[in-house]
Length: 487
Image 1 (tube, helix red, strand yellow):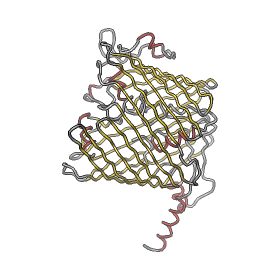
Image 2: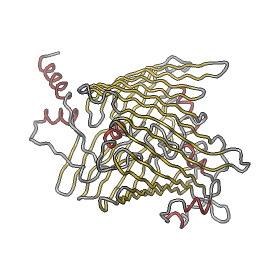
Image 3: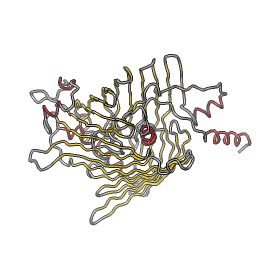
């Protein structure tokens, strides 16, 4: 290695150790962004609701920060690779930020398959910005190829789709190829009223999972209204959901259904949030029982609980009611809980419900150690939706949005602990089901804390067990990633 190259590498490492805060008008849905967002909003004096994601930041908080001085090409590369968004364009009435998306991971495992290593390769981009004073936009695109470990590959073969992402087609001898994208246009009519037209996902809750509305679905088009009346909030989401979110049937036979979510919330201070929620899957057949794409007039009535009163549970139009509550104390500790109710089946014995309790400690050390934070989280989620009723009901269109990834086991315990020191991070994660347990240990170094560009490696173990047998699979993995969505 020559002297100039050594000097360049040293300069890169020194500069990459600096921290510059991000300037986004919303928080992404990935775990890295979510931990950061939950901690910030727990202290937010503007009382932005944190339990409905994606979360928008008020216009007075979103400020585009251009480079303060003219940079040489080398300085520009170092700054925008390691300390800032990649491309930023700033004008009097227009701001635009563009970042690359890349995710390459390789897995190693000894199993019965002839392939001894597996990989995922993702390329894409994200762009976001602002038009004028009150119009915001976001878009991203992901192109993916992968050779998956056996336990994942078998699921994709069975479903015919990549769970939560979309249709997957065959790639080479035993791989998969798929793509998906997000898009959002948000107009802030004033500081108390926002309208969003988007294709993506929403999430209700403060935890890793949700019993009401989660990420476990394909992207869907939706229109969202956010209103604020003092300490009261009212959000309406009108969406077009795809039947059987994980795709149990052939993709060509899928049906769509209009869906509405009504969220009425109260947040008197940054510490306390309470929301009551109604979810509706509207009837998608006409009077003759034929599939129809014509929406019902009732969809456009912005009145919470009107659908439940009119249609009840488990009918052609199916409703769910619930609540979400969280409280933050000692500045760093959040307790959260939610519950939903979806009625009973015709024989009255099976009740359809879900509930969740959890605790998230944003920093156990309470900022006592400089540049070091320690996060802890525990969560228990229970869903009782073992039996689907019929092709047109709530179960097929929304059950996978409100249960864990392992849809055969509806009790889930989630444990998370991670420690950050400057740009280094160690993550531990355990997800426990009645018949299986997943354990994950990851080491990361963030090359860029703004875009979350990181190099990582770790070990993952999955165990299946019953009274007679126990099967354990262990994987070693490593990679490099700029991946803003929840993967």
